[in-house]
Structures are given as C-alpha cells and as structure tokens.
Amino acid sequence: MQLKRLGLGMRFDYLSGTEREHARQAFEEIFSVLTLSELEGLSLYGGQDPLSNPEENVFLAVIMGGSLTVMRRIYRKLSADAAIGMYLAHTHPFIENNRLISWEGERFYGTVGKNGAVSGGDDDTLSGLTVPKKHGRRKPVGKGIKVLFAPDSFGKLTSETAVKRLAAAARRHFQGVEIVPVPITAGGKGMVSALVTAGSGVYRRAKITPLKSGGARSAVYGVLYGKRAVLSLAEILPEDSSITSSFNVGEVIRRALDEGLKEILIGTAESVIRDCGMGCMRALGMKFYDPEGTELKGSLEELSRVASVDTELLHPRLRDVKITVVNGGRSETPEDAKEHAARFRALAAKAGGLSEEDSAAVGVLLSAYAGAKRVNGTEAFLDAVEFNKLLNGVALAVTGGLCARGETYNETSSAYAVLKRCMSRRVPAVLLAGHEAEAETDAHPADDLKIAYFDIPHMDGSEDEVLEERFDAAADRLFRFIRLGRDVEKIGAPKPPKEKTIRELMKESLRRRT
Image 1 (tube, rainbow, N blue to C red):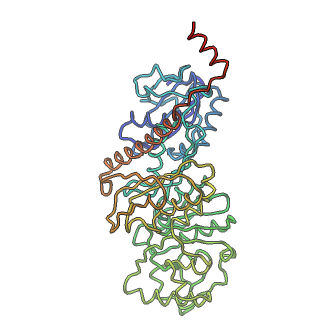
Image 2: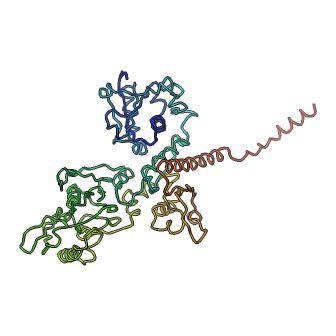
Image 3: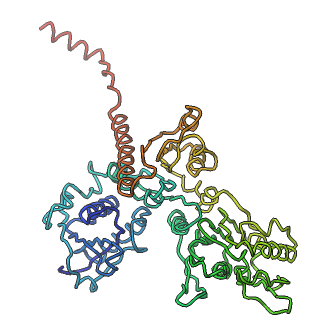
C-alpha cells in the first residue's frame, strides 16, 4: 500500500460469510452517507484488519488519498451516522499516517471517478456501486427520509444484527435514507450496547474487585443523555458458580452514584443472584454482622450467620436516585440455604423499615432501599432512550420478532409496545414476524393496529445461515415494495388534457378549413 497522504480506516464487524460480500456491504454503507464531492479521486482499500485478532473477523475499509481537510469532513459525516456506528467494531473511524504502512494482504478496490463509479481495482468487488452526486438528478433516493428500526431478537438473530441487516436492505433501495437504530433487548447481555446505540450514549468503565484469581478488574455500564446510567447484571455477575457474591454489582452502582447520575436502569435478565443481594448492598455501605459482632463480607455462605444489619453508612445518594429494575433475574439459592435467605430478607427489611415482600423484589436488596420499581422490560427500555422523541420526523418504523398472533403477540410483547407508541404518534409502522403462532381466531394484529405485516416463514428454529438468509430476503421484499409504491405515487395518474383557449380553438378551426 502506498501511503501518499492520509488514510481513513473503518473497522467493520463481519456480516457476511466472505470477505468479498462484506467489502461490498461495508462500502455500500459508506457510499450511502458520503457524496461524490468528498470521495472523487480517492482510492479504496480493504481486507482483514491487521491491528485486530484474526479470530475477531474484523474487516478494515480504508479511504486514502485526500487532504487533511477532506478526511476530517469524511470522518465527521461517518461518525455522525448512527447506522454506520452499529457496524463498527470500534467506537469511531480513525485517521492514520503510519500504522497502515506495513499492512500486507490488503486489496485495492479502485478509485472513485468523476461519474461516481469505482474503477481500476484488483477485481470487480465494487462493480455497480456508485457514489451519489451532491446535486442534480443523481441525488440519492430517499435523502432526508428518516426510518426507525426497533426490532426484538429473532431467535438466534439478535436485535442489533437485525437492525444492521434492515439498514443494509433500506439503503439498497433508498441510498440516502437516514437510519434511527433502536435495537430492543430484554435486559440481559447486550442491553448496555443496545441502549447506548439507541440513545447515542457513551460507555463508562468501573473498577471492580476480582472475586477470584484472574477475575475481571473492570465492568462496563452506559450513560444516556448525561443523566441516566444503564447496566446489565448479566454482564457484571460472574458466570462461575463458585463465586456466590454480588459485590461487583454494588461497585458498579456506586460508581454511577458517585458520577452524580439521577437515574439508574438495571437489567437483571439472564443473571443469577446467589446471595440475595447481600454483596451488592455491602458494596453500597450496608453492614452485616454475625452474633459475635464480626462484620461479614457478603456471600451466599454467610447468609446463615447474619444476625444484625446496619444501614447507617449506606451511600447518601442511594435514596435520592431513581432506580428501575427490569426483568427479574433467577435466584439459585440452594435448598438448604432458603431458610437462611428468608430470615436474612426479614432482617434487612426490618432495618430499612420495609415489608419483607419489598426486600425480596427481584432478589436484589437494592430494589427496596433505593425505592426502585419493577416495570415491563420493553417499556423501561423505550422510556430510557426517550423513544417518543426519537419518533420526531420519522417517516416509517419497523419492528418485529418471533411473534405474530395469539399468545405470542399481546400487550407484553416488545413489538406491541413499539407499535402502540408509533400509532399514538401516527407514524406508519411495519411488523416483521418470524413465525405465525396458532390462534383460535383468524384476527390479524395488523387489522387492529393498521400496520403493514410481513411474515418470515419457517424462521423459528432455523440454522444461523438459513435464518439470516430468510431475514434478509424479507427485509429486501419490504423495501422493494416500499420503493415500488414510491415510484407508483411519483408517476401518478395521467394528467388531464390542458383546456384550450378560444384563440387556440379558432386557429385549429382555420387550419382544418385550409
């Protein structure tokens, strides 16, 4: 690779099975954001990222040959696009002038010409792709149109992957469309990433105490709009069953409280709480003592020894912050420890002046001492990202999941919550359903909610590759039909003939006579 000036690199997570397919997908996304005035004359390279572990399957797309001013302009536009951000394996694009010099195995895809086409490359990987002009008839189709994607997971296909594939399909038919990504999760692993993506948030890293040799020393949580912390217990609690303390959870919450955040959203799905939250509350300042007055560290093994609880040194901001707990986690308290757990909860509730029922909420004592409330996971998610504000200016919303009719489609489903909010704002919506559940009635959810409905047959339980193929085909059909409808409306009905004036009629009459 000849580095004449600067190279701007973007690390993409692989979506396709081959490097050629992914290269085309990556540059298709890039071209949907940039215009010819920015890319004309620049060279395009790509290949396996030399700066990442080969097992991570990270594709590096490089734009090269522009001035620093041009590269900065490109960087700003790519960084500001939410859909591009979902594809990236790292937070932002990067500009390099040294580390890429030793890159071996890169592929040259060509140079962007005056007509927007890419030519002169080693192969025809980007054949047929063009960069839209900024002005004139080649202005990208769909420019200025905002589309929101808020799907749930489709079985093994995560909500974030579903958003990425929907974005690729949308920009295949509407190159200039603006994407608003809102991947829905149930409060387990991936919740922080989904919320940061949807709410344009930032990541924070909190130091935690390793609970065993070689254990984690830090944990990640997100901050939305500078006021709301989001964390998932499934990403903090160790999967090792030999570790029976929730101490690390309390450390992350304490870090968020010290930061001065006013709200905390805690996802507990897919997590296992083994100590009734004893370790969590100890990290937040609660003290536990045995009958001899010895302070306990907080773990499942010590539940039977708790004789008294002291709440005097609880974190001072704990009672002032608004805490929401979604989707209660599992409790794996052994049978022989359940009696001790019940007595422990009673002691903790008495110390806080609460009912025992409150102290047992979702197995985390925090829910009692911080006045937290349990809510529907999807509703809490949508509130956290301020979904109603995200709908401003949206021309189309797309949601869905493995649901369609009957018991799988009701007021507790994620798709239902999204659709109801869209309908209240009169935003056109589409439901993508992974399968149709059996129902006693033939009533269709689209009939009541006045939405478009696309079924993805035989998707439930499919192999990963087949599942992705069927989802991509359905997404492509969806936007192909929308593009067709747009073209039909653009052509419209034939215009009525223009009425002729009296002078024109007299001239026609004279011509006929002669």
